[in-house]
Length: 161
Image 1 (cartoon, helix red, strand yellow):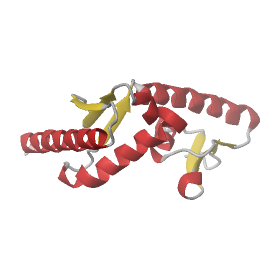
Image 2 (image 1 turned 30 degrees about the vertical axis):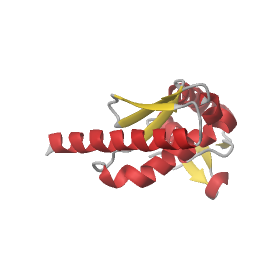
Image 3 (image 1 turned 30 degrees about the horizontal axis):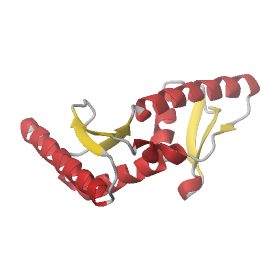
Image 4 (image 1 turned 90 degrees about the vertical axis):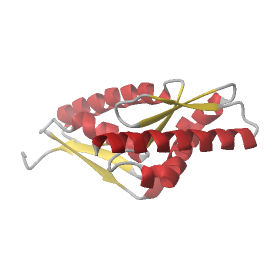
């Protein structure tokens, strides 16, 4: 059963790679998606002359491509698996930035006692901060707002749980 899930994931990942490369070719973009072995599922690393286009506006186009691929191919994935798209190690760099930001916000909330609310973030970015602060029982993190204006709020945990 486990082996079948891995094969299904690899097959869907290859299909997603081919689909993405077809989009790039039809749009006449100098981009190429290649699958990479990744412990967290299907990683599509995108490279090429036009790769900077995917990183404009904080990686909005990269996020949109990833969302599209997950909508199209996730039904073929084992439960809990998803496609992750990356360009020039953007995701790892951004995750490290978000973890530093989370620690800075935590220190600020502890010292002032006042809540700290980040600017609008996508769900992946909010998740990184939630996870970075999840072990800290003094703090509470929650997503607030709607749609693209959704933010993450860090406050003192008054309940003591």
